[in-house]
Image (cartoon, rainbow, N blue to C red):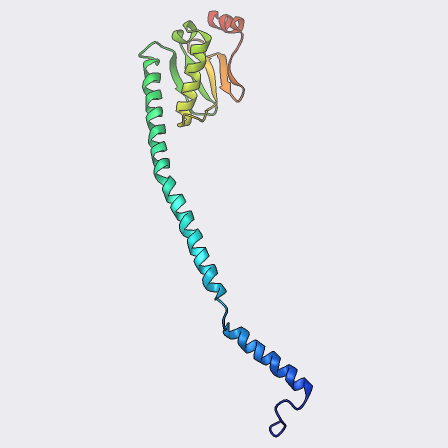
Length: 169
């Protein structure tokens, strides 16, 4: 094909135009680079997500400190109601789950709302979080008989007759 004129046949014209178009496409003459635009867009999105993530980090740290302070208040309040205080509770058996909380005279003298608040707070304290709960079985400290429970169904005391009959044995 050296001595043949450049566009002697129609097939040659098509072949040369396809080759020429391919070269222009590879050189991206007159077109913006797609990789550059997508790269810049990716960097912007990445920076925005990083800013959002690190912006919320201090709030999580403050929230942990608030939870820790709340649990410390719960402990102080529960200690005042413990064996050395008004004897709402005598001891805690945490060897197996659910925990066994042995309640004393102060628990029986309190009204139902105070009993429920006490057990709810004790459950939050055991869970280590003000919004989470630990399952608790309530036992009489004198007789070691079950008197109630705190779990998925909330606070529940067993019928009074059963508790009193168990106490007199």
